[in-house]
Image 1 (cartoon, one colour):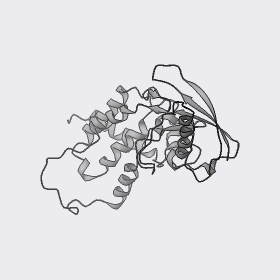
Image 2 (cartoon, one colour):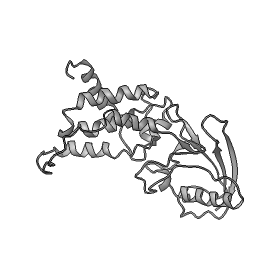
Image 3 (cartoon, helix red, strand yellow):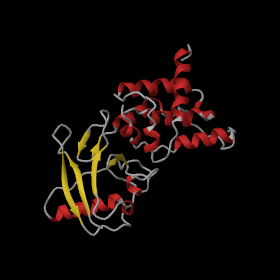
Image 4 (cartoon, one colour):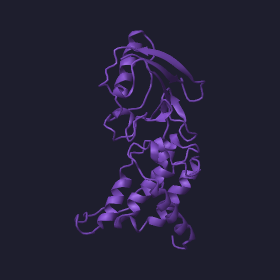
Length: 249
């Protein structure tokens, strides 16, 4: 397979970026998209040129690092698939492919295809946890959890924090990410004591980090590689309203 790539190159965050064209030959349909980029980088290195910078870690669809926009789609054309799990069989021989970083004000470009997603970590640090005193852990069966609630919590917890929801949203909203992180703890007994405090802190931090607001485009759900439902946004909004009206800390 042969491809014509247009890859975004940007030396550093504030420098002017541009698309750089590359022709890649002998691409196997069994390669992942990142493996194809590895082949391109080997070609560049052999020509004494600077390789293309892009994020990756586990390459198993778990870590959320592979934040690439491919032909205008965060993570590429295949639904419910991360970039690292996208295989070249999804592309046609001779196809032109545009590769660029996630585009959002809260995700400034560091270099080439690498963006700074520290803002998502800041949201988690503001309340995305359960405070516990260090002591003997509870027995696993000490707190019974309703099956329906447990399933919903697991659905929300599947979020890998990649930021595709932000990159796909016309307003660069992070509502799907935040609602998943708020909900997966708010649905469990362990998360109840800090439920109100958590949702207030995380939503306010989200706003402070420069993310846009949700306008129900549902692009976030369509782009999410883990198919997180927008129903969690409605759940978070209800929790936020209740916490805002409450006089309790």
